[in-house]
Image (cartoon, rainbow, N blue to C red; front, side, top):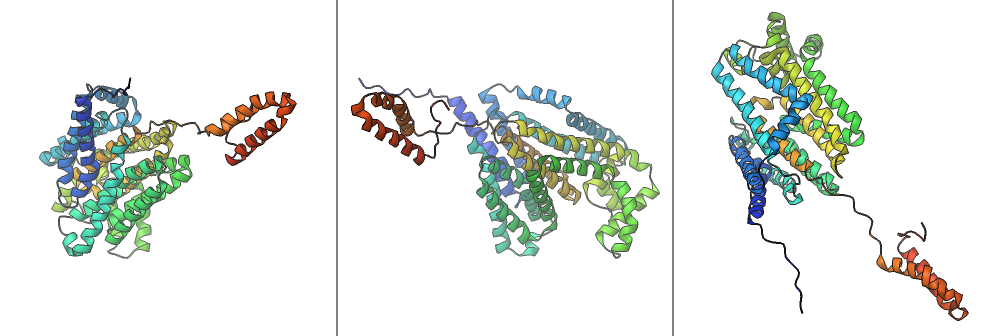
Length: 457
C-alpha cells in the first residue's frame, strides 16, 4: 500500500494576510522611495496606504492586541514619557502662536506621523519573514539606480527646480539606506551590504547635493565607530545629540566672535550665528517658552527675524518651543539612542543591528540640523517609515544557532573501530583486520579535520 505524505491544511485567511503584509511592506520600502523622486505628496499618501495594508493583515490573521501593550511600554520608558510631554507642550504652544491655523496643521502632521508609526509597529507579527525584509535592500538599490538614470537623462537645472522633489528623494535615500544595510549585516551578507553602500555613496556623490551627502557621511562615520566600539559609539551619539541640542544657544554665543574672525562676511555659518545671537540678546525671555508652534517660517517671511537665521532643527525648536521643548526633545533623543544598546541582548543577529540603528539616528539628526525638516510633513512621515522598517527587522531576528554538522561515515567508523575492532583484536586471526580498521578511522579523522570528538571526549 502506497502512503502519501500529509500536506498541511489550506488556510486562506493566513495566505491573504501574508499577501497583504507583503504588499504593504513593499509599498513602504520599495514603491515609496521610488515615488518620492517624482511627486512631493507621494510619501504622505503612500505611507498610510502601506500601513493600512499591514493593519488589515493583522486583523485578518489575529485580533490586534499589540496597541495597548505598546502604549503600556511607552508610558514606562523615559523616552516615551518625554515624547508624550513634548507633544502636549507643542499642543499647548498653539495657544500663543500668532497663526493658530498653521500651528494646528503642524500639530496634526505630528499626530499623523505618530499614528502611522504606532499602527505600523503594532500591526507587525511577532516574527517577520526574511523574504519581506529583503525588500529593503531592493528598494534602496532601485532608488539609487533610478537616481543615476535621472541624472544621466535630465539636466541638473531640470532636476533641481523650485519643487526640490529630486533633493527630497536623495535625502530619503540617505536615511532609508540604514535599515537595509542593518538587515543585510544581520544575515551575514557583508558583500551585499558593502555593494549597496558603494552604490548609494556613488549616487549621492554624483548628485553633488550637500544636504543628503552630509547626513550620509555622518552616518557612515558613526556606523564604523559603533561597529568597532559599540558602547563608545552609542555614548558619543547619545551625549553629542542631546548635549548639542541643549547647549545650542550657549554655543552660538560663545562661537560667534570666533566665527567673525575665521569667516568673511556673507558666509552662511557666520551670518547664521550672528543672526541667532542678535535674537538672543534682543528678546532673551522669549527663548524660555518659545514663540509658538510653526512660527519660524512666517517670521522669516515677514521680516520679524533675519533671513540669515539657520533652517535647522536646533534653532527651530528653540525659537518655537523654547527651552522646555528643547529639553524634552534632548531627553527623548538621549534615551532612544541609549536604548539601542539593549538590542544586542536579543536573538541571534540582533547585536549586528545596533550600528545601523545608531547610524540612522545620527544621519537623521544631521539631516534635520541641515534643514531637511523644512518640508515638515514629508520628513516626519519618512522617519516614521524608517521606524516601522527597523521594528520589522528586529522581529526578523528569531533564528537560533544550529549545531555543527558531523559526517555520518566517520562517526560510524569510529564507533565500529572502538567496539567491533576491539573485539576483533581478541581473536589473533583477526588482528590484521582490526589494525586496518583502526587505520581507516584515523584516515577518516584526518580527512574531516577531526570534526568529531574521540571516545569519551
